[in-house]
Length: 452
Image 1 (cartoon, rainbow, N blue to C red):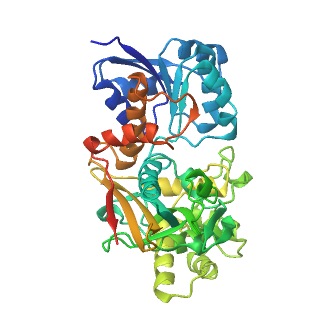
Image 2: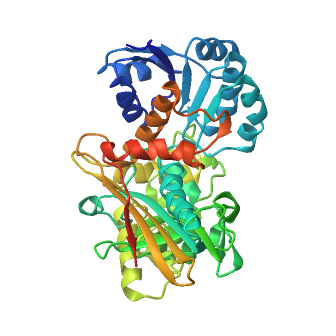
Image 3: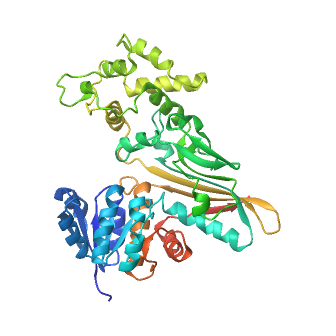
């Protein structure tokens, strides 16, 4: 028996439990789960052995440094803005760190110090980022080793309700806060398309959505996700005329979301009449009336005003959007608004009331990489890699599992001495991504590859 390893897990969000469950299988690990509120840590650990819940405020430097120093490795599943603090504590204690987040500039600045300390700060090892890197680089490196080159790279990923659970006008459900999903609709997108650098402003993001064909059973659309232009360099595919990474949604989502954008619902400016301190009850028709600056609060008048905010002229889609607005109840005098401070937050509260997963409902993750390849002999073909996974009814969601399990695998490989590249790293080289990929299929996570 090898010596027991002590792991500090910061955070108890939805991806924490699949990671915890994976790490406890060996029987050789002890995990300390740390949250600001002790009861949150206790709730997560109550079903497991070899775990200890503690209360920890990561903003308390002394407490954070002491906790990190007392463990062999720290997993940081707290907001990405706090990862650099954790890494600084780990560098001081010469202990490893794992996160599922993109490497931020503040994290990258710690690379030299991490190398000097001889520690691994592993990042981007969830789903997106994470699994997407592994299966993309597998094919990219295979093509390069065979003397070919990548002419085009497109990658689209979505966390969605399974088809039978996509039963609302947006075709979407939340397993956590809606705020992050809505805020992402304001992001600019930047990518390469046919040799040209394309830049899309957040207000126009939904207009850029286009059909993405993966399996005939799915009516999917995709749009760019932030800045993917630098992936030509990051993946070393300099010949790629097209290089885009994007998000997947079901058909109809962009047009409905764009209507909410046009109405002004993504405004997160504090509004006095929406403040919790304002004791006056507020019906939803009053909220929408004030947002639109309309003279009437009558539902039918508000619906006419909303119709003018719908961009598409397709009559069927317009009908679906109006049906969706009625379903949301945001023109109703009978539905009370939950006061959260801003139009964005009051809409989030309403969406969370209506669009959370119900008992026994499944989610789904779907990820497709598509490569246009020129082979060594000059011939060309298309290669695809598709990961499709469903959540377990009343068990782990697909999203939680595909983020938490790769994180757990990377953690175990570091503890076992099988991943050794020090510094602030991501799974970009075979010595890192191959050992992780070797273990994913046994967890039900795989990619189906096809050459067309």
